[in-house]
Image (cartoon, rainbow, N blue to C red; front, side, top):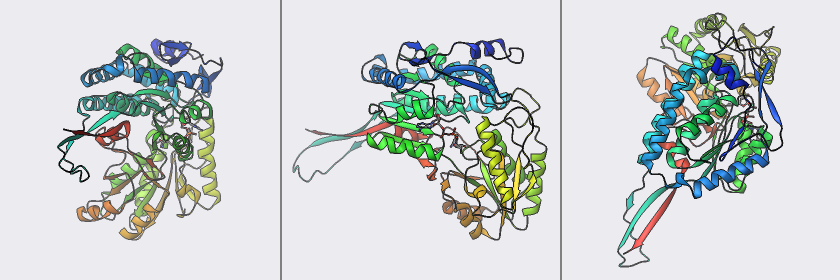
Length: 498
Ligand code: NAD
């Protein structure tokens, strides 16, 4: 159990409670009785247990979601009522923002202050944005010619209907926010949900379950099954009565989920990995670009799907920008998420720490040079020293594969064509940033970059109004923006022969 002195009494009471699944009206342990240990990444100590849900629990959760979708108060609610409920949920998250941030910090390792300002605030903003869409889901009238119905007078229109039961499987890097990215459009459109949080970070999802009940959502609208990916996650993705799957995580698991979805023709959207380039052009403001490049990779300790993990700098500025980014990295104090002076916390798990350090070692063995970091962290907790690698090439594993930690590879380029070629030379296409004050050059570059987001003189500029998702192996479909509604609704064509 967790030591209670470092956190609010409310936080330790929540963490130490006997955690249960949310299935319909039922708050139960896993049917198998098994549990999963939850670790504090800053200490490596077990802080609590959650139920290890499996196929049996998922079957019950999907049945509860189906019942709620087909025949319940929820299915009869008006759009304005769904809007009001989402606002109420956002208000409750706001009222509990510090508690949620503290739980997230202890569970994931991230800074409490950043969790509150970024994760929790973005979740609130997003739910409020989606609440507005609940009353604006509409089709349109059409005027078909119907040549095989000569002389017919018809009224024709399209309607948009909620897709049904949504299976949502999320990763551990922004646990509450990623869950809300799925819940927002599902609840705005009238779907019901079975949520499977990551096994590393299940706690804020369970707190969210309490807030969803408090907001007044009818029974079975949101069901939460904690458990392992290969058990609960696999069962959810193969379930024939799930109408839509939405996933955030690795490309490898995303492909498994996509294949499982196709067997039942389940709709599927996938928000997967990335290896996003940060491109510093000749006339960029170098001080701003260096700070921006450092933020692009070191935010959330590099555990961001669109992290700027490849830095390409015009050759005349390469040494200066790399020196500045390395300086910034060298001055990022490491420490646990409740330490207000720490600017970089531990990674989420011992496994992730090992995986990231293995990549660094592999890069160094292949001839790369670390301008900062490189050496393994010594001490308790899953920390990795922020690292910048130079003398790498475009074909090396550290340049091509998603490391998902505070590791930046940096390379020079000669001209715009080369910058675009190497930026696009990746299986991924999630985000890219261009740092330049040359407006016409920027406009010429944007259409040539193959990624779902392009940021200019900023990076990871996410907002509820902007669709987010990937080209190539970074995923399928989009989250956020008005575009997300298409993925949570079916369109129906209606023709009435008058
Ligand atoms: P993962 O893809 O294995 O896990 C993400 C979610 O998928 C978790 O909820 C997990 O339980 C579930 N899952 C795992 N196996 C499953 C299966 N067979 N069927 C259904 N669900 C399954 O991610 P990870 O192992 O935690 O991290 C591995 C790598 O994924 C990271 O190092 C990083 O490269 C990448 N990642 C990307 C993102 C992103 O936002 N794009 C987030 C986290 C991790």
